[in-house]
Structure formats: C-alpha cells, structure tokens
Image (cartoon, rainbow, N blue to C red; front, side, top):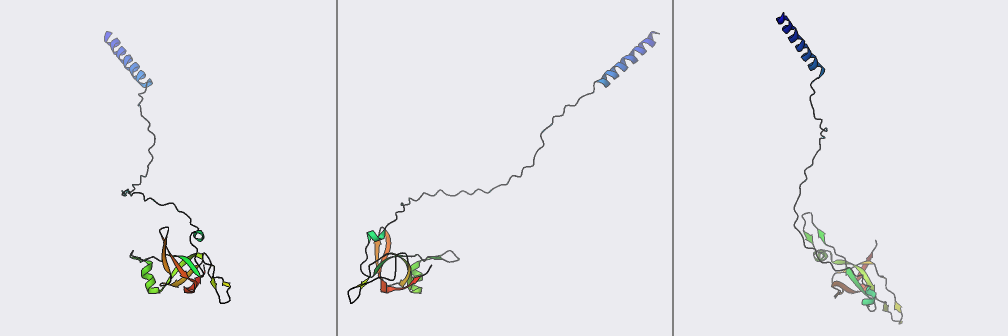
Length: 165
C-alpha cells in the first residue's frame, strides 16, 4: 500500500505542479519600439567658394552738375551711356569698338547752357534739355574728367537727335 500511496502522492504533486504552471502563464517581455519613419535624406553638393576680399565701394554721392559746371552759350555737358555688349561666347565688346563701326555715341544730358545769341542780340533757347538721351558724332566735343568720371562738353549743333523713351 505504501507504494500505492507514493504513486498517488506523486500523481497529486504532478497535477498541482501542472495546475500552478497553468495558472501562471509565462510572460514574454517584448519591448515596443516607436515605429521608424522612413526619412528621405537628400544629399546636397557643397562647393567650396574661395573667399573674396570685399571691395571698398565709395559712397554714392549725387552731384548737382548745374552747380559744379556751367556750360557757356549752346554747350552741353553729357555723360556717355556705356554700350558694352557681350557675345554669346562671353567676350565683352567695349563701347569704343562699337562706336567706330556705328559712327555715333549715345549720352545723357547733365547740364545745358543758356543758349546762343542770334544777330539781333536775343538769346535763342536750346532744343535739348537736362535728362534727354541724345545721339551725336563720335568726334564731337571735348573730354573732361570730373569727380573721377569722364564727361563730354559738346555744342548743340553736334547733336544729331534726341531719343524718345
């Protein structure tokens, strides 16, 4: 009988072990991680530009040319309009090269004189006024340097025409 009891006790222990094992399920610990977002990273090309020294620019001074230069009679003080052109290949053609082929220059009138005296002694006013863009022969006038700027003094009769805006 003792063996029967031992067998019965062993069976009972096995059942208790099975029940306790069944009661306590094994928990697996799973770490939840945040969902990964697919980030598109664009690679940019970085170019190294050489450091340029900053050029010292002189302050822009607006000059009233009528107070600085007073042309006499029918003379005009004009500033040439740069006619530099660039070819498709990148070559710069200066205004002096184009003026030889064309024969005339464009300029802006900065100051105009009072006008010329006629035979009766009265002053005939000029047809050209300050701010006009004029065409004149390339050989006309006298070059003058004023405030590091090249200006021309020309007679009104050298003007071929006034350009309209």
